[in-house]
Amino acid sequence: MSSSRTLCAYSSAIPTRLQQPALVPISLSGTEGINCLFDYTVVLMTPDALTHLSAENANFALDDFLGREMTVTIALDGSESLLPDAVGHGSGTREISGLITAAKMLRQQGRHALYQVTLRPWLQLATLTTDCKIFQDQTVIEIFDTLFTDYVFPLDKRLIETYPKRDYQTQYNETDFAFFSRLCE
Image 1 (cartoon, rainbow, N blue to C red):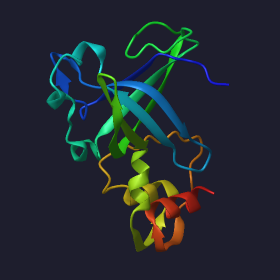
Image 2 (image 1 turned 180 degrees about the vertical axis):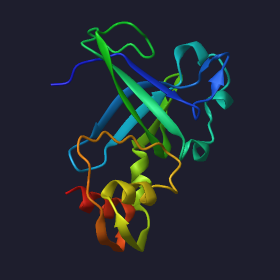
Image 3 (image 1 turned 45 degrees about the vertical axis):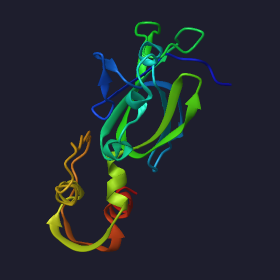
C-alpha cells in the first residue's frame, strides 16, 4: 500500500526560473537492499508557477544533469496527499542522496513537461571498471582508503572494532565495488 508524502528535490542540475526551481518532484520509486546499490527513479514536473513561460523554458540540456548530485527528501507521517516542494507537513524526513545516472523527458501533460531522472549512489561508479591491484601489510580499512582515493566523494566509516593488518590481499580483474563487497563479507 502506498501513501502520499511531501517530496522535495535539491540539485545543482535543476535550473531556476524566476528565482524558483524549474522542476519539482511529483513521484519517487525505487529499490534498495542490504549488500546492493540503491536505484531510484524521480519524476520531475515543471511547476504551475512557471507554466505561463514559453515552452523554451521547459527545455533542459539533460546531458548536463548526468553525474550531478541530487538529494530527495520525503516527509514521514505526512499529509494525506502529495504536496510538491511543501515543507513542514510531516513528523520527520527521509533523505536519499545520489548521482543522476540517467535523465530523459517523459511527456507533455497539459501545460506541464514531465522528466525522469535515475538516482544511484556514488559507489555505483566503482562498478564501471575492473582492475588488478596488490595490497600488502594493510588493514581492510587502509585498503578501502587506498581503493577509494580516486573517488571524489566522502567515505564515512563507522567502526566499532580495530582490524588486523593483512599480509597480502589481491584485487584480480574485479571492479572496485566487487572487491570492496568481497572484503566486507
